[in-house]
Image 1: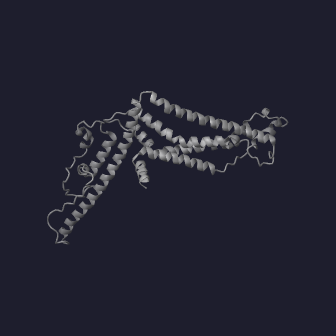
Image 2: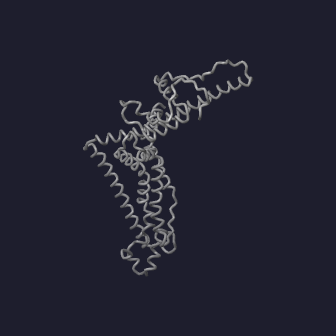
Image 3: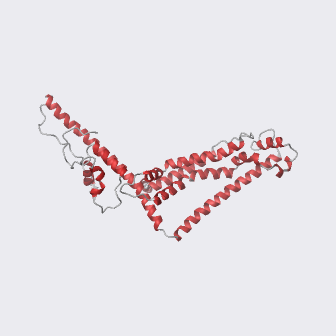
Length: 344
C-alpha cells in the first residue's frame, strides 16, 4: 500500500510521468481497438484502395490528435511561443525541445496502429490488391484485362464465389501479405535502431544545451501550474473575504433600519483564516495574496502576467516585477479594513 501511495504521489507531482502514463495507456487502448475491429473490405475496384489506405492512415491521425490533446505540454508550448515578449525573452530552443517531446509522445499510439496493421496485412491486401502485376501469376494469364481487374478486386474477400478456393487468390493474398509484413518489420527495426542510436550516442556529445533546454521547458510547465494553483488559492480567499464583508455590511444596514438594536456600534472586522502550522511561509504568502482586493487589481495582475512576465532573475528589484500592475490600480496593505462592498 505504501509503494502504491508513493507511486501515485510521484505521478501526481510529475507532469512528465503523467504524460508518459497517458501515452502508454493510449497505446494499449490502440491495441485493444485494433484487435476488436471488424475489418470488411468492400472488394470493389474503385473503393478497395480508398478503404484500405483510409483504415491504415485515418485512425493514426485521430490517435495523433488525441496524443496532442492529452499532453498538457502541447498547450504550454503554444502559449510560450505566442506570448508577448515583455520582460522575458523567448528562446526558440526551448520551444523546439518541447515540440520534439510532444511529438515523440503523440506518435507512440499512431505508430502502434500502423505496425499492427502492416503486420496483420489485411489493410495492405485490400489497398493494393488491384495494383498487383498479373504477369507474376500464371493462373491469371488466361483472363482478359477486365476479368483480371475483377478477380484482383475480389482477392481480399476469400468467401466470394468468384475466388473461393482459387489458388491464384491465395497466391496474390500471400504475396501482398508478405510485402506488408516485410514493411512492418522493417519499420519496427528502423524505429528500434533509431531509439538505440539516440540513447547510446547522446552521451557522446556535449549535454550542456540539452540540460538547459530540458530544465527551462520543465520550468515553464511548472511555473504555469503554480500560477494556476496560486490563482485558485487567491480566488478562494477573495470569495471568503467578500462573503464575510457582505455580512459585515448587512449588520450595519440592519442596525440603521432598527431591526437589530443589540449590535455593537463599532465596525466588525472579518476574522482571518487560521494559518497552516506546517508551512511557516503561508502567512507571508497569504499577505501578498490579500493585498489584491479588488476586481480592477485582479484584472491588472492577470493582464500583467500575460503581457509582461517577470524576468528570470530573483536578484532583480521587485518593483520591476509589478510595474505593469502598479500602473493600473494601487495595492492595499494587508490587514486594511474595507469600508465598502468588494467589487467581485
